[in-house]
Image (tube, rainbow, N blue to C red; front, top):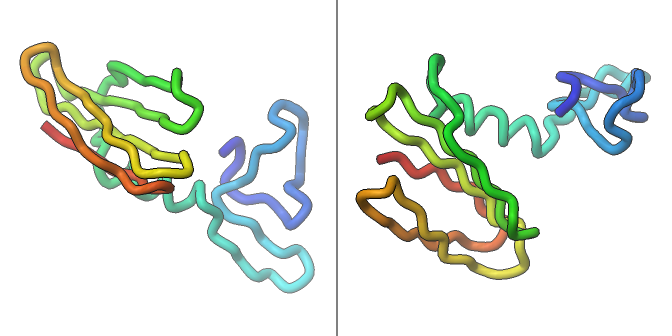
Length: 115
């Protein structure tokens, strides 16, 4: 997601990421717009992560599981976004030091967990 909109050749490209896509692809010949998977991921996160939140954790130690957590204030609501990019269903455990929780995600699923 290094750019909001790119053409069908992922351009214009000024260096940096060699395989990044925009949120949308605009066909330079006919103007058609294609929403890329990143568009939906960005939209999903923007519904649950409010302005003023601090990113408090992220995890990518598992090649199929990606997470990022946000918190509002020192003792405020925590929002965890989890992506299961693996080939099978996964159970994810998470917590805040006081309580632990678990959620099962189908393969390819994105989930938002709030506590």
